[in-house]
Length: 429
Ligand SMILES: Cc1cc2nc3c(=O)[nH]c(=O)nc-3n(C[C@H](O)[C@H](O)[C@H](O)COP(=O)(O)OP(=O)(O)OC[C@H]3O[C@@H](n4cnc5c(N)ncnc54)[C@H](O)[C@@H]3O)c2cc1C
Image (cartoon, rainbow, N blue to C red; front, side, top):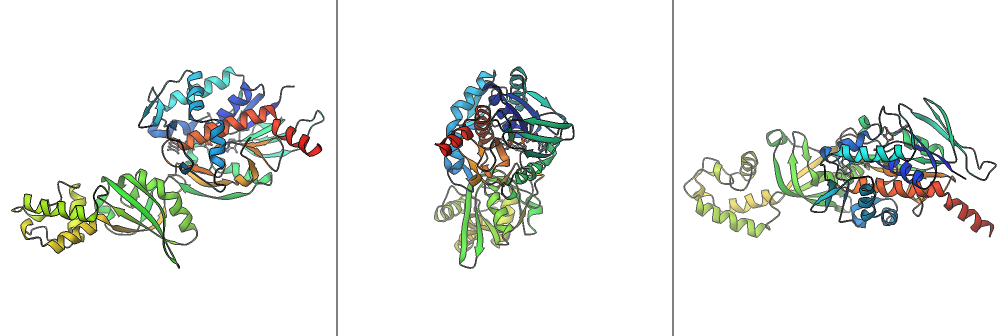
């Protein structure tokens, strides 16, 4: 008999779940509280949509249950994602493993999902906020029964897929209301915090450095009673802003900053502004530079290394008078200068809010979800997909891969309803 399902949330994971449930023979309705589905997809990858990444491994994901994300992704790996989109007419291209639609437009990805959902008979109800949902137990024919109470009336179904996103970028629709729905079914929520977001730092020098982009390595530490602990590190193009640090390396470590700050720990970033050389190597380059530019003023000394404003900042930190002739800079000052370049300590006072975050850490606890189906271990017929779950990936297409994989698994499992049937059969022998 055809199973009837509701998907709450028409984002990347919800649309994928709906398509796969429909492809597996279910009759599906997507309930979406924005006027249109998939708004967040349009802002991904600066409008180009970094859909996935050819390098996929466990260390690209954070989750309360280590190993959980990869168990799901292995069921629908990157090769299946590429095949899925190709089957919907989307050609892809990759740059160093980062996969984008060949069109260079996120709109292509959304159009493909929307078109496929429509052609598979998925019903989409927009401007429809799900206020509450309940499980009314198995119906007389043995299937499960759910009712979603919405601003557009009640909807009932045999299965329910909760794909309502997180609290990140609430202007795209994910306002955190999905967590309340999950809680109403008895599920625990790990506190959501902003992730892939900018770091706010203390210090009055940021105003003068705002707008500079430079290659750097960032190491994030938490000061604990037992000593300072390295939380995370990353290397890439760092952006200095009027309030602190942005750019991919800052984003990658930000979830750890948010977590440590939430625990009231002291957090600081140690930034190496010349990661390609060790301190000794940098000192010898600086000495060589002194020889090359001997007769000039010190203010030009680092111009060949850094943006002018950053160069001036390091000279000031090292106490080098900008009017002094370069040949007169003593070795000890060059050594100090190298130390300033190799290690700047920035106390981190916070991270930017959910408005600026690309994703959230935290969410529905994975210990209560079956990684083989994305089904709830508490309520039969309830499934989860996407960012609502306590899984967050690093930058680079990993969060969308999580949306595609978890959406696929939730969709096919829900439509087949096999997990609970099998479990009940196991229980009854
Ligand atoms: C600016 C930005 C850039 C990004 N770039 C990338 C990138 O390039 N690559 C990458 O991998 N990831 C990227 N991400 C992250 C990625 O977009 C998300 O992880 C992914 O889209 C999450 O999909 P989702 O379906 O789980 O949630 P969402 O896309 O948030 O969808 C949830 C949907 O549920 C709806 N909803 C919520 N509550 C209710 C309710 N009560 N009733 C009805 N509907 C409801 C919302 O309106 C929304 O449409 C980016 C994120 C942002 C914000």
